[in-house]
Amino acid sequence: MVASETLYGRTANFFVLSGKKQSFEDNEVWHVVGSILCKQRNKANVDIDCLIKKIDKIYESFHSVRVKNFTKYSQELSEISQKISFEDLNEIAWILEIFHIISSASEFENELKNCFK
Image 1 (cartoon, rainbow, N blue to C red):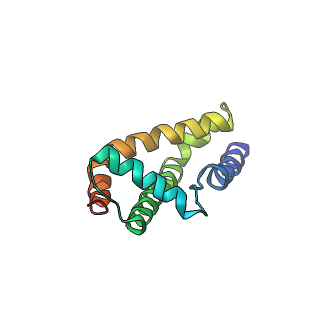
Image 2 (cartoon, rainbow, N blue to C red; image 1 turned 135 degrees about the vertical axis):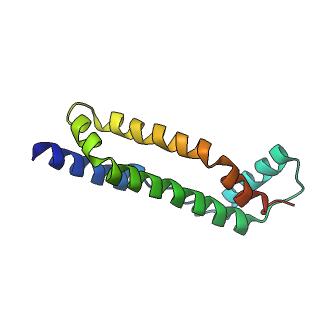
């Protein structure tokens, strides 16, 4: 019982504390991001609204992977969660997200390329 309580408590903290995406109030931040991305991609300009929508969609993809991993592999995570810190659990999730990024890179690129001209 303690292992599952530990996992559920850590999972709740994990989703609340580390699952948040950065939300910029100032649209100027997005213009700076867009400007840098245009230079990196040798493009003249970017549709900022499109960029924001695509980045939000990518964040949602990360969140769904996080939920899937903590649901589908709850037994494995429950077993290890008593032995490791919250920071270590967060690191495990980040490593799993890195693999998601790598395996989904072409999909993400296709989502983003339509924003640049």
